[in-house]
Image 1 (cartoon, rainbow, N blue to C red):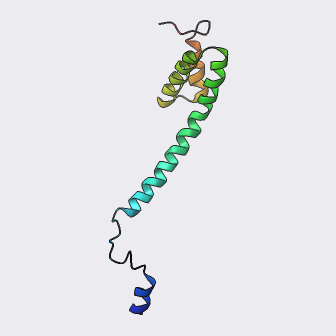
Image 2: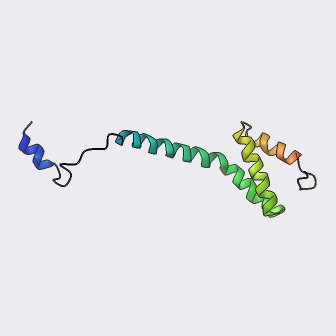
Image 3: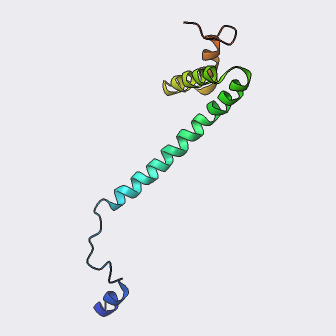
Length: 98
């Protein structure tokens, strides 16, 4: 390879800089973060929509409790439909009693 060609094709501002040895790990992390973001937002989308509809019929605090409980159960492995039905079964007249 012609060394003059190589030196002429490299931007002189970057010639003496060392590439980050973790550069490819950062790309992987960014890709993984994007996948995680997409999966998370796709998973909670139906719960958010449900909560917005529920808030119109009840109250925002009630809807937020329902959404939080459904999301918690989904984190424990329940699917959305089962988690929603379970949380709904805890209500009496659209209210949670302790």
